[in-house]
Length: 360
Image (cartoon, rainbow, N blue to C red; front, top):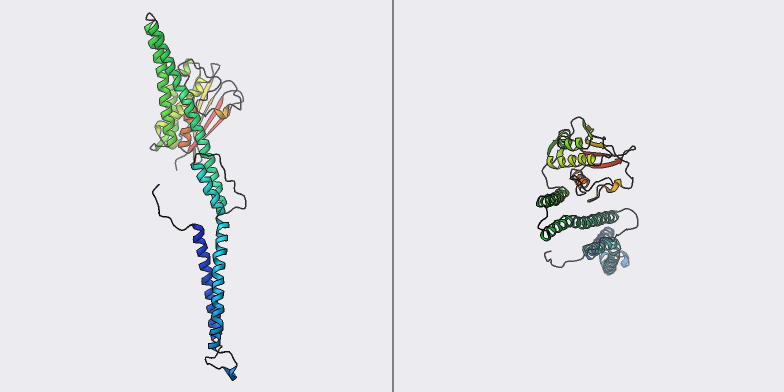
């Protein structure tokens, strides 16, 4: 922060403003009274019969009293203005203290200003909301960093263990070792790419263009059809055009993650996955629905958190993933100013509904 020359405080400025306004108002009032009296006072030294008040006597009598009154108004304005300004700015002092506390790293402090609704109360409530969001965001980032470190450490540790075993046992099957190392390396690479994609979508640094989600859904379904057939899953794409504005790459990754998640979690076999797109009013809707085993209601809200996995995820196959699929979906939807709803199906499985702004 650049240095600035010290200036008058807001309280002193308000005090001087109150006192100055009061002094000017008093001076105007005295001037009006003085001008009104002068119209009816004769301009002579003796006055009528030598005893009537004249302009000379009125000046000598009125001006000292007016000066005393002006001095009293000035002092009253300064003292009253100082007290009044302090009372008016007391909420701002609390907000400033809270901002300093937050600047020192403590985001748990809240102002919680009492009283009726006014500008300061609105500012305090907005500041509390900002602190709450910042605290939640920081906690999420810390949890994400800890989980990411753990997830990245695991494949590296496995690679190191495999290399140590190969070093101690030169007769070990080389092809088997290379295959396992490749699988571990692929998992680490996928996790790194997912982390980068998640970070990119969180920042919102992407260009926007017109995208038809129905075409994106068909492309994702065509890509994942072999996986669905391998697992005995029927994969259907229904609906009509669903246009929105956004990143075609991110939206394709979003739909692909949803369809892959629906296929992988579709247990037992011989289930179905339905991808439906439509334009509903001023919104574009994408719905991915899959059969499967019933999901506990308390598990569903946590599925969009990074490194959260459903209870049916099988970690041993090539599609085990890193637990970032729905987290990336949630981040992409949020970056496109949309909403994401996860609803357990009564008969088992999950229905995921994405609503994005439609084309004008």
